[in-house]
Length: 231
Image (tube, rainbow, N blue to C red; front, top):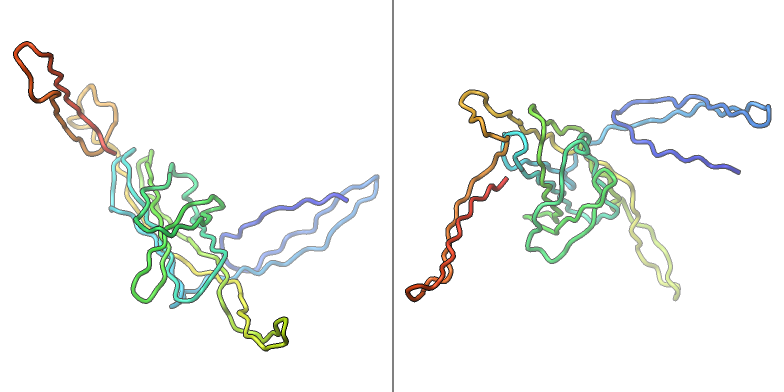
C-alpha cells in the first residue's frame, strides 16, 4: 500500500469541499469521494488570550525591532501551538530571554521557539521576544494569528488499580484568536543623504578607552576609539 499524507492549514472560516481525487492503477482508474471540511472561526475567551505587540510603531528599513508574543491562561492546558500568518516572510530570530528559570518550547508556524513563564495578575503567562529586521519599506500587518491548545473541558470518573473512584481531567481542543499588530517600515529620506551613506540605521554609540591609565615617561599607551552601530 502507498500512503500520501498532506498537511493542510485553513486560512479562513467556512465550509469547503475537497474534490474527488482519481488515480490510475494498472489501467484501472480509481476515484475517491469528495470530502466536506467545516472550518470554524476562532472565538475570544476570558480564560485564554494571545497578545502580539511591537516595541515601537515605526522603524527604518533594516532597523531591528522586537515583537512580543504572550499567551495568558487561567486554566491548565497542554500542546500549545501558535500560528502567525505572514511572519515567515520576515527575517526573525529569538530575542533576549527573560530572567525566568522556567522555559518551554512552543511552535510558531511549526518552528520551535523558546518561551519563558511570565505570570501576571490572575493569569499564568508564557512569553517570548522575536527580533525582526524588516528589509522592505511599507506596513507590516500581522493579522489572523491564532493559538491552538488542549484545555480541560470536564471530568470523568475512573477507577484506579485498587478500585477507588477518581476524577480524571478530560481535555478538548480549543482555538483563540490573537490581536492584530502592525508596524510601519520607512525608507531612508533621499534629501540630504550623504554620498557615502550605505543604508545602515540604528543607534550610534561612541566609546573611548586608554590602556594602561598609569604610565611612566616613554611607556607605550594604546588609545582605542570605538564607533558602534546598534540596530
